[in-house]
Image (tube, rainbow, N blue to C red; front, side):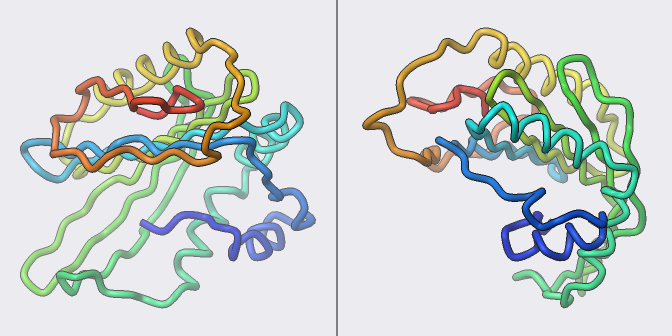
Length: 205
């Protein structure tokens, strides 16, 4: 599933009737968490964390809470070219909505997607959980088939991330790399705890 990147800032700002500066970001540091895939297939978790200014945290939450945000995401995905993946599959976003977030998370967006490949098709949910604590922002992307019970996993994700955010300790970042990425990991069941070594924000899943 595509993400909103710098190249899309202008389009998102126009859709929300905001200035493009409303999406300007200058993180002090960032980290990407390990990817987890369910052993039964069809589920995956990815996460990122950034240290930003308190002003940006407040602004980003306001943007994400905009009643048009989900619709604008769908419009941007629909307006992009259909790029088949390595299996020849195409993703279509059927609908999206904002849901009540689990305890510890600030925002939850859910998108119903249809994936069609030459040999099979599947409907799945692409969920995004947003967390903010102090100057740390965390985004978790959770993908699962529509017939897969997900609320338990959502709660586990929220509990793990929010606990890390609450227990984080300030530490100097001078001399540390501005972006940290995990070593490649083997597939693990959804819900398995993973702490990324030497992770600057100490908050990615």
